[in-house]
Image (cartoon, rainbow, N blue to C red; front, side, top):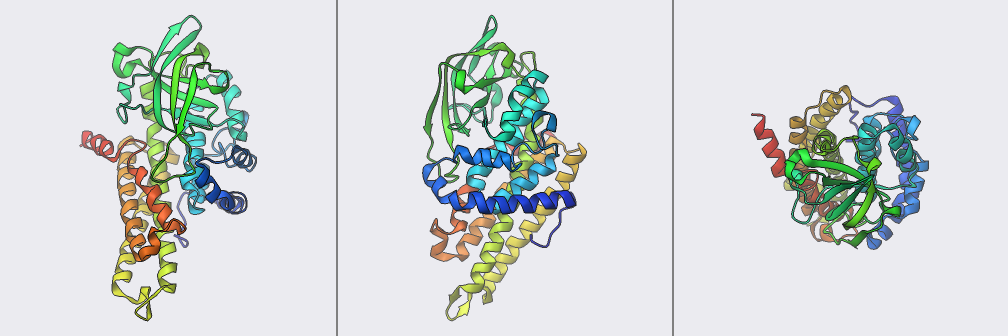
Amino acid sequence: MADHVSPWMTEELSILRDQARRFLEREFVPHRERWDKAGIVDRDAWRKAGAAGLLCASIPEAYGGGGGTRAHDLVIAEEIGRAGLGGGFGAGSGVHSNIVAHYLLAYGTEAQKLRWLPGMATGDRVGAVAMTEPNTGSDLKSVRTAARRDGDVYVLNGQKTFITNGQNADLIVVVAKTDPAAGARGVSLLVVETASAAGFRRGRNLEKIGMHAQDTSELFFDDVRVPAENLLGETEGQGFVQLMVQLAWERLSCAHGAVVAMERAVELTAAYVKERKAFGAPLISFQNTQFKLAEAKTQAVVARTFVDDLTVKLLAGTLDPTTAAMAKWWTTDTQCRVIDECLQLFGGYGYMTEYPIARMYADARVQKIYAGTNEIMKMLIARAL
């Protein structure tokens, strides 16, 4: 909320927040509708974001990044959400900067980091991670995409779907089986450089309920020869563990996005019901409106308090995967409920896409699906009981 200051915020982060807000309002917001219709964010926008320091903010300066912490990433992501850009550039930049870049930072060799990260920081290279397959969602150990070692290359075959940044991506971290008989221990991560990957094909840019400006694609790998030096982690079979270590952060990122969406929904709706009249009186004067907004704001404040606490733990290195799973499922479920209740107060206008609340409603639904479905989150929590 506008009057809330998170305990992890600093003066430096506040300055970054203001700079990001001004940049997004000036450079990106005017293009949002066009990007929605095109189903993709311009490549030039990625370069502008890189020049403004909005990409790879928590990657060390030695690799072209901003040299900040995960808090810098969160501040940027929150401002993207507040600007109404979460359903396009927000999702894509989150995967690019907060997931792919950190896979490379955590598991890449020095040569790999120097080769790939600087271009990601400038926006000249766009990153994606290819996990999901047509018949495999959250069960990553069951992927069928296979990488067979052949001398100094891996021969990669398989299909991926629902891949964020699929159309724009230059670097794709592909989850593949290097030992199909080994289950989770046979999973490895390979980096595919699309410009030089013969046999790699992009499928269609998928049409979705929401997040219309985000390119989300099918990807095909037909005997793609990937240099063995593009393996992350130097030895095969580490992919599943690598993914699990990074997923706690990804799930907290989802929770942050949910909180920002709730806060924005309450603010937009409160402003609307003060202006809109029914039966000769402002909507805010009716008890039902007051009660619904009171419930929505309370849920947003509770979510913010919870997520702020977990962010402090994350920055201290003490956030555990189980609690991150709790945050992911509860905040995203709550996000969908809050936005639904807020949309109802707009009446018919809430169903019109020219109103932000309608776009927020459509964009919110996938939050309960990606980064591991909320049902999977509950299974993870139950295992710790």
